[in-house]
Amino acid sequence: MYVDLTPAQRAQYTQLEEEAIAWVRDHEGIEAPVVADLPIVLRQRLRTATLGEMSLDAEGEIFFDADCTSAKITALRGVLDEFDRQAGRKEPAVIFTDSRRFAHVVAERMNRAGYRALAWTGDASEKQRMAMKEQFLAGEQDYIVATIPALSEGLDGLQYRCSKIVWLSRSENQLKNDQSAARIWRPGVDQDAFMQVDILARDTLDEGTFSRLAMTRRRNRLQMGAAV
Image (cartoon, rainbow, N blue to C red; front, side, top):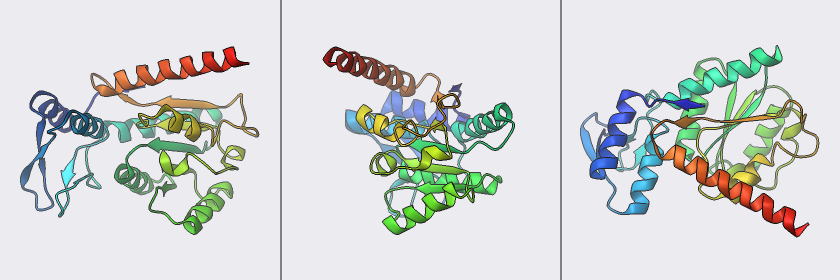
């Protein structure tokens, strides 16, 4: 699913793309520069800008304000509502992103809008994760907003309640993406109902990253087939 960045997001993205610097608001509401002085840093900043309007916290680190404009959060609600419409009932889903801070903002915004959501990130303890899993499987929560590394390994059972995945952003490591998807696409899932949707920002790095990762998936599958 392709979306257009909000004007605020597009302005930040274009500034970074053209000048390797973007002006964002800090914790006091004053405009301050975000500089990307290395190619790898610039790439990460551009990917971050596709998620939501960026700000700076008190330590000068990039974060997302709870009310930041985000084309992807708006689109996410539409995707989830369409899942429900097609199924004729509430359809649970796992929502992936590579940004811990964005995962927390998405979960908060969803809850404020009446979508029962949990944030599953690397800063959650093992005890907290097991409690969240139990809440999700018991139907007390309908959505898990997870960072890819935090939910890519060592977890089974979500597939018994969920057959839907939404990607707000993918890892640049295709193995991590495959492992994350395998939390749902595994024995026990309703294969006929299974669906995954990528929300991509038009005219951004999203498109090239998605195409490159898709090529990697196809190549890996061909190699596995040849090995068999």
